[in-house]
Image (tube, rainbow, N blue to C red):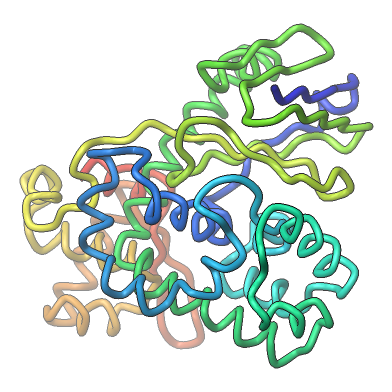
Length: 320
């Protein structure tokens, strides 16, 4: 059982993460990759990344068993981290945090020899670990990241609406099938007995694509209070080919491809034209239409215009 203890200040300071958290998705996808939970939901993704994952996951696998505790420092607590910021935070993990987390992990399993250098905070070891995490993301998550972000954004929008219209307590009561809200305590099913006292710090609610089954949180109570919990999924989310046929029917092939391209990463009109193999006037026209529909935003970037996808655009891609 997980019991989270609130004060009135905590209710006022509870928030929903503004975007998917790459470091959490990396860690939790490792569990999905190595276990069988989620069955048909993740099976196609597992098959598609299996070979690349075998090459890139060793350091991560050493720090996260197939079940149970994973070191807290893999998921830094700074708010709304991008992947680059998360990796930099990992490289700068204080020795005290490294030693504390590794000591907990050593209580349940034998650690490989390289973690002795990690416990000493050796920069080269932290860099190797961060590089491995980045390679894993690039190989196993990046090809699907637009879809991950879109589904999380859909869930976040639904929960923001609940919080705005019905209040934080209503959201907490419906956060998870096992949630039981009886002020001032939120109870959730959990693998072990764990008490989390917020003490006025508030709670960061983090909907996660690769979380499955029960929610999770940090073991260390001094870290920023965070509750990571699963969202609903659609079978076949990781498939290609037919995935975006409805989107193509709605927007047209060229416009759908422009939206997908901008969703993959922001780009100037010239870059979008190059990546979609269209002419510059066509890319500009399609971007203008998408912007008018609220699916992308555009901003001046020097002498160029930089296009970025909006939450509405991400949600539409997720529906694909």
